[in-house]
Length: 395
Ligand code: FDA
Image 1 (cartoon, rainbow, N blue to C red):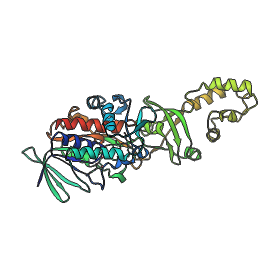
Image 2 (cartoon, rainbow, N blue to C red; image 1 turned 60 degrees about the vertical axis):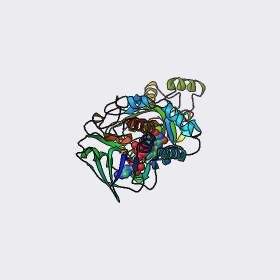
Image 3 (cartoon, protein in one colour; image 1 turned 180 degrees about the vertical axis):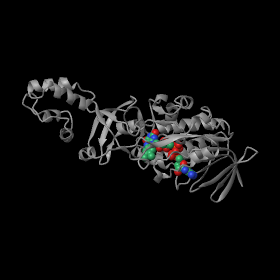
Image 4 (cartoon, protein in one colour; image 1 turned 120 degrees about the vertical axis):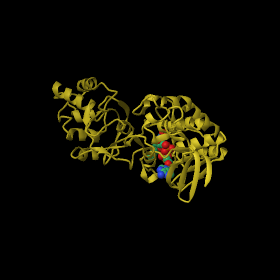
């Protein structure tokens, strides 16, 4: 049986960062992961450039049954701390939009940073390792059975992530460990995920596959995002939809404003004065993609009239349809394409300062496995860094 001060399960963003910090504090740390390489999601993230944090991190950008839980860790290890670390490694970065920071070159640079930090902390990393069992002894030690080895430790950190992208090694392991130790798990679902549509609406909108438009989109309880919406062959995607998917619940509608920055009545009046015989469709095609206008006409949102024929009732209906289009998704694309998992280990069992389970000394949960889910845009990696750092200081 090998002895370690800490065993971290999961060599993703949170696990590697926690292991490195704990190792650099002088602890003897083992990281185990079921995959062939470390940081697989990091490598895939941000289109291969890793959106590693956001300039505007704030607790309101996180969903959790307890919205206060994330505050302490985010305040103690901030986006500025991680940016300093990225700068220390001479990784060039840029802000893409809305405070989202990406590597100029490659997400591999963030993985290299994490592995270098682990090396500095003399962390041992075992890949292709399954944890078969975790037993807590009377002596407050944990005995872990891995495939091929037995390990004894006083501290176990579960950083095994959520269920999104099973192809990248995602498993329900963390939730099972939580249940084994009597903790509740808040219901999980796919989030930051495209929404799918029923026929016949799908038949219309499928024809717009690949078209993106800047919109606002609202969920039933009032949350709003202003970003772009992308039509796909299965339904709706793009940042606006991925964001709202975390708030959307089955059976509800999302409300789309296709012209959020425009006074449509003013536009129509001006067009009518200048081109009274122009068709309404051609007029709208000046501010929306023509193929979208054609499909809106198919859906009877755009009457087949000229501007001078458009009466005030039709105009009012048109404005309502364009600014408050109620779309009823029939579901999401699920974990196969979701960036994150909503829900997870119930924060009521964890210390928000240390991430230790209150009634089980030496057991910690960090990162995405916990019921804290960020918006799109670097918020989830910042949660991984902040929760990992806070945990590592406490072990
Ligand atoms: P993470 O999932 O990273 O790591 C968990 C690790 O545990 C994995 O290596 C897994 O193999 C391992 N594991 C699981 N079960 C195990 C078991 N039973 N035994 C051993 N090991 C096990 N976020 C962001 O802020 N900016 C971005 O640009 C993106 N982009 C992005 C793209 C894509 C395609 C995805 C899927 C996700 C993102 N995200 C993102 C989200 C981000 O990747 C995610 O929130 C973090 O990786 C979560 O970090 P964790 O370390 O908690 O889990």
